[in-house]
Image (cartoon, rainbow, N blue to C red; front, top):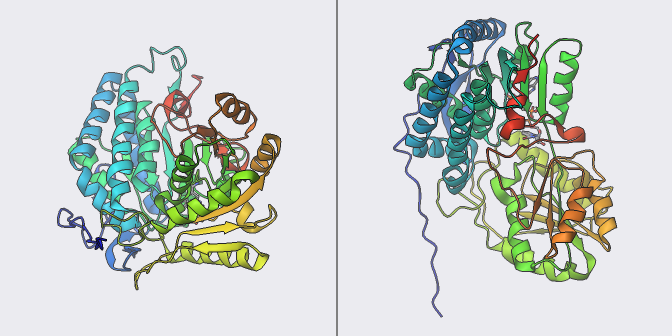
Amino acid sequence: MVNWQYSESIESREILDIKSKYTNYIGGKFVEPNSKKYIDTISPSTEEVLSQIAISNQNDVNKAVKAAKSGFEIWSSLAPYERSKYLFKLARLIQERSREFAVLESLDGGKPIKESRDFDIPQVAANFFYFAGWADKIDLSWSTKGLKPHGVVGQIIPWNFPLLMLAWKVAPALATGNTVVLKPAETTSLTALLFAEICDQAGLPNGVVNIITGDGTTGSLIVNHQDINKIAFTGSTQVGKLIQKSLAGREVGLTLELGGKAANIVYEDAAIDQAVEGVVNGIFFNQGHVCCAGSRLLIQESVHDQFISKLEKRMQALRVGNPLDKNTDIGAINSKEQLNKITNLVDEGVADGGNIFQTECELPGNGFWFKPTLFTDVQPSYSIAREEIFGPVLTTLTFRTPDEAVEIANNTEYGLSAGVWTEKGSKILWTADRLEAGVVWANTFNKFDPASPFGGYKESGFGREGGRHGLLSYLKESS
Ligand code: NDP
């Protein structure tokens, strides 16, 4: 028998020109933060310091909002087809520099290069192309005709899909005539700052896109700024609630895309091997740092043992390691804080009585890592079945009837996504009709398209991103 040896295939970093320090991007220029403060940004896979990013204070936020206000005068009065041309240009430049973006995203955030190269960056470009196509049709479509932009939009994005979340927010905001002040997450700001360079390259009018870096305090300064007309936030339910409270009583538009604890339901008549693949993709994609991850596996009792044995075998084949290795399936956990959160919840799951399976793999010595993990023998009351772990950890529950599956699936404070695996089309429709989730995937999982609206129910937030619904979030009635 041939003994296969594994050879790594590392994507080169040479394409990158990472500066030692990054300032804010305000009014079309890179400017020193008023605070004069910077923090290190590291690669979570090695803990290597990659660069420093600015910590922005009230003066920096004031400056960015002022720039966005004057940018709005120019941008909103441009002919719609001119806005469209700029967006197409941004889309094309993203495609041209896609390798640079992909390598930087993997280095700064820890995700496998095959995901940043084949999923994140192509989706980023696709979003700009999609909304570029809308920009000159807003006044023609019956659903958006006569509506007007909010004005200056504050956008606060998380660390799990840094550039993609930027695209989900910036592209529809610009297409509808708004200007933006965007704050990326403090652990993953570098691709947003590279995007700022692209705005320059595209000759975007000054002040249309403003990117300021910082921590949660900077985010709350944006939320509370009196000249902000709309806030678009993606992140934790906890911060989403704080933002909603801060905006109460003010005439500020708000969309919140928050956490999730999605059920991935496998019926006994499902194609088991395909379902195993879908379940693996549903939870281990992007280290499980996915708000719509299929983190609760619901298996019909009759196929439980068969399914778990195939799943464990498949999990064992997942390659954990260097995000820049093209063979890597699971990269680094985004930060030490997130690793601690995952570790604590998993420890709690074991203490509660869950049966844990972790793959046998060697983890790198430096950086933040967590083995692909599966829990069986879980009760719905355990924290691992209720809380968003946001890591490579799958929790299994069982059911006997479709009614019971739906009851367990909906027994959560979240309502962002769900999956259904069965060979019966009628069962898919019956189940999807009853699931309280913004997106239901059938015999697949984690599929995205810029034309398809995405968003949640219950504590997963409100408002939609993507498609025509996503445009509506950036428009309001003319007064
Ligand atoms: P947060 O909600 O804290 O962060 C999301 C964004 O909001 C970041 O840019 C953050 O800045 C900013 N922010 C933090 N505090 C405030 C505030 N008071 N006002 C305005 N903006 C603020 O998420 P965490 O990074 O702390 O992750 C915690 C948990 O949240 C995860 O374990 C996961 O469960 C969930 N999460 C969900 C996401 C989703 O896609 N729905 C994405 C990320 C996390 P900074 O990062 O600089 O602190």
